[in-house]
Length: 372
Image (cartoon, rainbow, N blue to C red; front, side, top):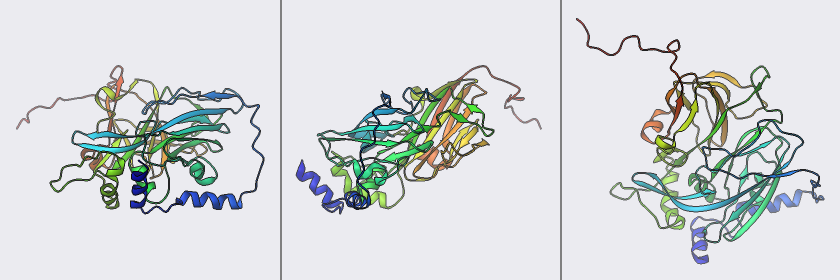
Protein backbone atom coordinates (compact mmCIF):
# COMPACT_ATOMS: atom_id res chain seq x y z
CA UNK A 1 0.00 0.00 0.00
CA UNK A 2 2.77 2.45 0.90
CA UNK A 3 4.63 1.61 -2.30
CA UNK A 4 1.51 2.28 -4.33
CA UNK A 5 0.97 5.63 -2.62
CA UNK A 6 4.60 6.62 -3.12
CA UNK A 7 4.43 5.69 -6.79
CA UNK A 8 1.31 7.75 -7.25
CA UNK A 9 2.84 10.80 -5.60
CA UNK A 10 5.89 10.39 -7.79
CA UNK A 11 3.79 10.17 -10.94
CA UNK A 12 2.12 13.41 -9.93
CA UNK A 13 5.44 15.18 -9.73
CA UNK A 14 4.91 16.01 -6.07
CA UNK A 15 8.12 16.50 -4.07
CA UNK A 16 8.74 14.72 -0.81
CA UNK A 17 7.57 17.87 0.99
CA UNK A 18 4.23 18.99 -0.52
CA UNK A 19 3.69 22.57 -1.58
CA UNK A 20 1.36 23.17 1.33
CA UNK A 21 3.87 21.80 3.83
CA UNK A 22 6.43 24.29 2.53
CA UNK A 23 3.87 27.06 2.86
CA UNK A 24 3.13 25.96 6.41
CA UNK A 25 6.81 26.24 7.36
CA UNK A 26 6.99 29.69 5.80
CA UNK A 27 3.85 30.69 7.67
CA UNK A 28 5.37 29.47 10.94
CA UNK A 29 8.49 31.52 10.29
CA UNK A 30 6.53 34.76 10.25
CA UNK A 31 3.85 33.96 12.83
CA UNK A 32 4.50 35.13 16.40
CA UNK A 33 4.11 32.43 19.02
CA UNK A 34 0.89 33.11 20.91
CA UNK A 35 -0.94 31.49 23.78
CA UNK A 36 -3.95 29.38 22.78
CA UNK A 37 -7.23 31.29 22.70
CA UNK A 38 -9.24 30.82 25.90
CA UNK A 39 -12.62 29.60 24.71
CA UNK A 40 -13.42 27.65 27.86
CA UNK A 41 -16.50 29.74 28.65
CA UNK A 42 -18.12 29.24 25.25
CA UNK A 43 -20.91 26.73 24.84
CA UNK A 44 -20.20 23.73 22.61
CA UNK A 45 -22.75 22.13 20.31
CA UNK A 46 -22.30 19.21 17.95
CA UNK A 47 -23.90 19.09 14.52
CA UNK A 48 -24.42 15.86 12.59
CA UNK A 49 -23.75 16.41 8.91
CA UNK A 50 -26.20 15.16 6.29
CA UNK A 51 -25.76 14.44 2.59
CA UNK A 52 -26.73 17.17 0.09
CA UNK A 53 -29.07 18.52 -1.12
CA UNK A 54 -30.24 18.46 2.50
CA UNK A 55 -28.68 20.54 5.28
CA UNK A 56 -28.29 19.70 8.95
CA UNK A 57 -30.53 21.19 11.65
CA UNK A 58 -29.69 24.81 12.46
CA UNK A 59 -31.19 28.09 13.68
CA UNK A 60 -31.61 30.94 11.22
CA UNK A 61 -31.08 33.51 14.00
CA UNK A 62 -28.35 32.87 16.57
CA UNK A 63 -29.92 31.90 19.90
CA UNK A 64 -27.35 33.72 22.03
CA UNK A 65 -23.63 34.27 22.37
CA UNK A 66 -21.11 32.75 19.94
CA UNK A 67 -20.55 29.02 20.30
CA UNK A 68 -18.05 26.38 19.30
CA UNK A 69 -19.79 24.26 16.67
CA UNK A 70 -18.32 20.79 16.34
CA UNK A 71 -18.40 18.76 13.14
CA UNK A 72 -16.84 15.42 12.22
CA UNK A 73 -16.13 14.49 8.64
CA UNK A 74 -14.57 11.37 7.13
CA UNK A 75 -12.78 11.28 3.80
CA UNK A 76 -14.08 8.47 1.61
CA UNK A 77 -12.40 7.31 -1.58
CA UNK A 78 -14.87 5.27 -3.61
CA UNK A 79 -16.18 4.53 -7.06
CA UNK A 80 -19.27 6.54 -8.02
CA UNK A 81 -21.61 5.95 -10.94
CA UNK A 82 -21.92 9.29 -12.74
CA UNK A 83 -24.11 8.12 -15.64
CA UNK A 84 -25.45 4.88 -17.06
CA UNK A 85 -22.17 4.26 -18.86
CA UNK A 86 -19.67 6.17 -16.74
CA UNK A 87 -17.97 5.57 -13.39
CA UNK A 88 -15.73 7.93 -11.44
CA UNK A 89 -12.99 7.02 -9.00
CA UNK A 90 -14.22 9.63 -6.56
CA UNK A 91 -12.62 11.29 -3.58
CA UNK A 92 -15.22 12.69 -1.21
CA UNK A 93 -15.90 14.44 2.05
CA UNK A 94 -18.22 12.16 4.07
CA UNK A 95 -19.00 9.98 1.06
CA UNK A 96 -21.05 12.51 -0.92
CA UNK A 97 -20.40 14.75 -3.90
CA UNK A 98 -20.49 17.58 -3.03
CA UNK A 99 -19.36 17.39 0.58
CA UNK A 100 -22.03 18.24 3.17
CA UNK A 101 -22.93 21.85 3.86
CA UNK A 102 -22.04 23.18 7.31
CA UNK A 103 -24.00 26.04 8.90
CA UNK A 104 -22.82 28.31 11.72
CA UNK A 105 -23.30 31.97 12.66
CA UNK A 106 -20.92 34.89 12.37
CA UNK A 107 -18.36 34.87 15.20
CA UNK A 108 -19.04 31.22 16.04
CA UNK A 109 -16.03 28.90 16.03
CA UNK A 110 -15.99 25.99 13.60
CA UNK A 111 -14.24 22.94 15.07
CA UNK A 112 -13.83 20.19 12.51
CA UNK A 113 -12.45 16.71 13.15
CA UNK A 114 -11.18 15.50 9.78
CA UNK A 115 -10.59 11.73 9.51
CA UNK A 116 -8.64 9.98 6.77
CA UNK A 117 -9.38 6.25 7.25
CA UNK A 118 -6.54 3.76 6.92
CA UNK A 119 -8.10 2.09 3.86
CA UNK A 120 -7.68 5.24 1.75
CA UNK A 121 -4.74 5.63 -0.64
CA UNK A 122 -4.23 9.38 -0.61
CA UNK A 123 -3.23 12.27 1.63
CA UNK A 124 -6.01 14.83 2.03
CA UNK A 125 -6.71 18.13 3.75
CA UNK A 126 -9.29 20.92 3.76
CA UNK A 127 -9.07 24.54 2.64
CA UNK A 128 -11.94 26.71 3.93
CA UNK A 129 -12.44 29.85 1.84
CA UNK A 130 -14.25 31.23 4.90
CA UNK A 131 -11.19 30.92 7.16
CA UNK A 132 -8.30 33.32 7.76
CA UNK A 133 -4.72 32.05 7.85
CA UNK A 134 -2.62 28.97 6.99
CA UNK A 135 -4.01 28.50 3.47
CA UNK A 136 -7.57 28.35 4.78
CA UNK A 137 -6.59 25.52 7.11
CA UNK A 138 -4.97 23.51 4.35
CA UNK A 139 -1.50 23.90 5.87
CA UNK A 140 -2.75 22.58 9.23
CA UNK A 141 -4.92 19.65 8.15
CA UNK A 142 -2.83 17.47 5.83
CA UNK A 143 -3.60 13.89 6.94
CA UNK A 144 -2.27 10.62 5.60
CA UNK A 145 -4.36 7.43 5.61
CA UNK A 146 -4.95 6.32 9.18
CA UNK A 147 -4.66 9.83 10.63
CA UNK A 148 -7.08 12.46 11.91
CA UNK A 149 -6.73 16.13 12.75
CA UNK A 150 -8.83 18.85 14.41
CA UNK A 151 -9.00 22.37 13.01
CA UNK A 152 -10.72 25.30 14.67
CA UNK A 153 -11.31 28.69 13.07
CA UNK A 154 -13.46 31.71 13.80
CA UNK A 155 -16.26 32.39 11.31
CA UNK A 156 -15.74 36.12 10.91
CA UNK A 157 -17.42 36.78 7.55
CA UNK A 158 -21.09 35.98 6.88
CA UNK A 159 -21.93 34.27 3.61
CA UNK A 160 -21.65 31.07 1.65
CA UNK A 161 -18.10 29.84 1.06
CA UNK A 162 -16.54 26.88 -0.71
CA UNK A 163 -14.25 24.41 1.03
CA UNK A 164 -12.14 21.87 -0.85
CA UNK A 165 -9.19 19.53 -0.66
CA UNK A 166 -5.85 21.09 -1.59
CA UNK A 167 -2.97 18.71 -0.75
CA UNK A 168 -0.42 20.39 -3.04
CA UNK A 169 0.72 20.49 -6.68
CA UNK A 170 -1.33 18.65 -9.32
CA UNK A 171 -3.10 16.82 -6.51
CA UNK A 172 -5.19 19.98 -5.93
CA UNK A 173 -7.17 20.12 -9.20
CA UNK A 174 -7.40 16.33 -9.33
CA UNK A 175 -8.92 16.03 -5.86
CA UNK A 176 -11.39 18.86 -6.55
CA UNK A 177 -12.37 17.48 -9.95
CA UNK A 178 -12.84 14.08 -8.31
CA UNK A 179 -15.46 15.44 -5.92
CA UNK A 180 -13.67 16.96 -2.92
CA UNK A 181 -15.53 20.26 -2.66
CA UNK A 182 -18.35 21.50 -0.42
CA UNK A 183 -19.81 24.63 1.18
CA UNK A 184 -20.10 26.28 4.57
CA UNK A 185 -22.82 28.88 5.22
CA UNK A 186 -22.12 31.51 7.86
CA UNK A 187 -25.36 33.27 8.74
CA UNK A 188 -25.49 36.75 10.25
CA UNK A 189 -26.26 36.47 13.96
CA UNK A 190 -29.61 38.20 13.44
CA UNK A 191 -30.42 36.25 10.28
CA UNK A 192 -30.76 37.18 6.64
CA UNK A 193 -31.98 40.60 5.49
CA UNK A 194 -33.68 41.73 2.30
CA UNK A 195 -32.72 44.71 0.13
CA UNK A 196 -34.33 47.11 2.62
CA UNK A 197 -32.74 45.54 5.69
CA UNK A 198 -35.86 43.69 6.83
CA UNK A 199 -35.54 40.19 8.31
CA UNK A 200 -35.93 37.31 5.88
CA UNK A 201 -36.42 33.64 6.69
CA UNK A 202 -36.63 30.50 4.61
CA UNK A 203 -38.92 27.48 4.93
CA UNK A 204 -36.48 25.08 3.30
CA UNK A 205 -32.85 25.14 2.25
CA UNK A 206 -31.24 23.00 -0.43
CA UNK A 207 -27.58 22.72 -1.34
CA UNK A 208 -26.81 22.10 -5.01
CA UNK A 209 -23.15 21.35 -5.66
CA UNK A 210 -22.15 21.48 -9.29
CA UNK A 211 -19.14 19.47 -10.46
CA UNK A 212 -17.52 18.84 -13.79
CA UNK A 213 -15.92 15.44 -14.33
CA UNK A 214 -13.24 14.34 -16.76
CA UNK A 215 -13.69 10.60 -17.23
CA UNK A 216 -11.17 9.06 -19.65
CA UNK A 217 -12.26 7.09 -22.71
CA UNK A 218 -10.68 4.13 -24.44
CA UNK A 219 -9.79 3.94 -28.13
CA UNK A 220 -13.33 2.87 -28.99
CA UNK A 221 -14.83 5.89 -27.23
CA UNK A 222 -16.19 4.01 -24.21
CA UNK A 223 -15.61 5.36 -20.72
CA UNK A 224 -12.82 3.58 -18.88
CA UNK A 225 -13.26 2.08 -15.43
CA UNK A 226 -10.50 1.72 -12.85
CA UNK A 227 -9.77 -0.40 -9.79
CA UNK A 228 -8.96 2.57 -7.53
CA UNK A 229 -8.02 6.25 -7.53
CA UNK A 230 -4.33 5.48 -8.01
CA UNK A 231 -4.92 3.56 -11.21
CA UNK A 232 -7.16 6.32 -12.58
CA UNK A 233 -4.70 9.17 -12.03
CA UNK A 234 -2.54 9.25 -15.21
CA UNK A 235 -5.46 9.04 -17.65
CA UNK A 236 -7.58 11.43 -15.60
CA UNK A 237 -4.79 14.00 -15.43
CA UNK A 238 -4.48 13.94 -19.22
CA UNK A 239 -8.26 14.31 -19.63
CA UNK A 240 -8.42 17.16 -17.09
CA UNK A 241 -5.67 19.11 -18.79
CA UNK A 242 -7.76 19.23 -21.95
CA UNK A 243 -10.29 21.35 -20.00
CA UNK A 244 -13.25 19.69 -21.75
CA UNK A 245 -15.49 17.94 -19.21
CA UNK A 246 -17.29 14.75 -20.10
CA UNK A 247 -20.03 15.47 -17.54
CA UNK A 248 -21.33 18.56 -15.75
CA UNK A 249 -23.63 17.45 -12.96
CA UNK A 250 -25.45 18.44 -9.81
CA UNK A 251 -24.75 16.44 -6.66
CA UNK A 252 -22.46 13.88 -8.16
CA UNK A 253 -24.31 12.27 -11.03
CA UNK A 254 -26.57 12.81 -14.01
CA UNK A 255 -30.15 12.89 -12.70
CA UNK A 256 -29.08 12.86 -9.04
CA UNK A 257 -31.77 15.44 -8.19
CA UNK A 258 -34.57 14.21 -10.43
CA UNK A 259 -37.30 11.57 -10.15
CA UNK A 260 -37.61 10.15 -6.65
CA UNK A 261 -34.66 12.33 -5.59
CA UNK A 262 -36.10 15.62 -6.83
CA UNK A 263 -36.19 18.52 -4.41
CA UNK A 264 -39.67 19.31 -3.08
CA UNK A 265 -41.57 22.36 -1.84
CA UNK A 266 -45.11 23.62 -1.27
CA UNK A 267 -46.80 26.57 -2.88
CA UNK A 268 -46.12 29.68 -0.80
CA UNK A 269 -42.90 28.33 0.73
CA UNK A 270 -39.69 30.33 0.53
CA UNK A 271 -36.77 28.12 -0.46
CA UNK A 272 -33.12 29.07 -0.15
CA UNK A 273 -30.91 27.49 -2.81
CA UNK A 274 -27.17 27.45 -2.14
CA UNK A 275 -25.16 26.66 -5.26
CA UNK A 276 -21.41 26.03 -5.49
CA UNK A 277 -18.84 25.28 -8.17
CA UNK A 278 -15.25 24.46 -7.28
CA UNK A 279 -13.58 25.06 -10.65
CA UNK A 280 -15.77 26.58 -13.35
CA UNK A 281 -18.24 29.45 -13.68
CA UNK A 282 -21.91 28.51 -13.81
CA UNK A 283 -25.33 30.13 -14.24
CA UNK A 284 -28.19 28.73 -12.13
CA UNK A 285 -31.72 29.28 -13.42
CA UNK A 286 -35.14 28.06 -12.25
CA UNK A 287 -37.28 27.43 -15.32
CA UNK A 288 -40.64 29.01 -14.50
CA UNK A 289 -39.32 30.80 -11.41
CA UNK A 290 -36.93 33.52 -10.35
CA UNK A 291 -34.49 34.61 -7.72
CA UNK A 292 -36.56 36.89 -5.48
CA UNK A 293 -33.45 37.76 -3.48
CA UNK A 294 -30.05 36.71 -4.77
CA UNK A 295 -26.70 36.97 -3.01
CA UNK A 296 -24.87 36.21 -6.23
CA UNK A 297 -21.44 36.29 -4.65
CA UNK A 298 -22.84 34.58 -1.56
CA UNK A 299 -21.86 37.33 0.88
CA UNK A 300 -24.63 38.38 3.26
CA UNK A 301 -23.10 41.75 4.15
CA UNK A 302 -23.94 42.79 0.59
CA UNK A 303 -27.43 43.91 -0.44
CA UNK A 304 -29.16 41.09 -2.33
CA UNK A 305 -30.19 41.60 -5.92
CA UNK A 306 -33.89 41.20 -6.78
CA UNK A 307 -35.97 39.36 -9.37
CA UNK A 308 -33.10 37.71 -11.25
CA UNK A 309 -33.86 35.25 -14.03
CA UNK A 310 -30.36 33.72 -13.99
CA UNK A 311 -27.47 34.38 -11.63
CA UNK A 312 -23.75 33.94 -11.95
CA UNK A 313 -21.64 31.75 -9.67
CA UNK A 314 -17.95 32.16 -10.33
CA UNK A 315 -15.66 29.13 -10.10
CA UNK A 316 -14.38 28.60 -6.57
CA UNK A 317 -17.37 30.18 -4.87
CA UNK A 318 -20.91 29.59 -3.64
CA UNK A 319 -23.98 31.81 -3.98
CA UNK A 320 -27.47 31.87 -2.49
CA UNK A 321 -30.90 32.62 -3.93
CA UNK A 322 -34.28 32.81 -2.19
CA UNK A 323 -37.50 32.11 -4.11
CA UNK A 324 -41.13 31.86 -3.01
CA UNK A 325 -42.91 29.28 -5.17
CA UNK A 326 -46.21 30.70 -6.44
CA UNK A 327 -47.34 27.89 -8.74
CA UNK A 328 -47.39 24.10 -8.37
CA UNK A 329 -45.67 21.83 -10.85
CA UNK A 330 -42.31 20.37 -11.75
CA UNK A 331 -39.66 23.05 -12.08
CA UNK A 332 -36.34 22.43 -13.78
CA UNK A 333 -33.33 23.89 -11.98
CA UNK A 334 -30.52 24.13 -14.51
CA UNK A 335 -27.15 25.52 -15.41
CA UNK A 336 -28.23 27.94 -18.16
CA UNK A 337 -25.41 26.90 -20.36
CA UNK A 338 -28.08 24.66 -21.86
CA UNK A 339 -25.53 22.45 -23.58
CA UNK A 340 -24.19 21.53 -20.15
CA UNK A 341 -27.70 21.25 -18.71
CA UNK A 342 -29.23 19.04 -21.39
CA UNK A 343 -26.28 17.21 -22.92
CA UNK A 344 -23.84 16.91 -20.01
CA UNK A 345 -26.19 16.53 -17.04
CA UNK A 346 -26.53 19.84 -15.12
CA UNK A 347 -30.28 19.59 -14.48
CA UNK A 348 -32.31 19.10 -11.29
CA UNK A 349 -36.05 19.11 -10.57
CA UNK A 350 -38.18 20.75 -7.89
CA UNK A 351 -41.64 19.25 -7.36
CA UNK A 352 -44.04 21.84 -5.89
CA UNK A 353 -47.45 20.99 -4.44
CA UNK A 354 -50.37 23.42 -4.54
CA UNK A 355 -53.32 24.86 -6.46
CA UNK A 356 -52.85 26.39 -9.89
CA UNK A 357 -53.36 30.16 -10.17
CA UNK A 358 -54.79 31.07 -13.58
CA UNK A 359 -54.15 34.75 -12.94
CA UNK A 360 -50.42 34.08 -13.15
CA UNK A 361 -50.64 31.74 -16.16
CA UNK A 362 -53.29 29.91 -18.13
CA UNK A 363 -53.64 28.18 -21.45
CA UNK A 364 -56.07 30.29 -23.43
CA UNK A 365 -56.18 27.96 -26.42
CA UNK A 366 -55.00 24.37 -26.48
CA UNK A 367 -52.91 23.29 -29.49
CA UNK A 368 -55.19 22.69 -32.45
CA UNK A 369 -55.00 22.44 -36.23
CA UNK A 370 -54.70 25.67 -38.18
CA UNK A 371 -57.87 26.81 -39.90
CA UNK A 372 -57.20 28.15 -43.39
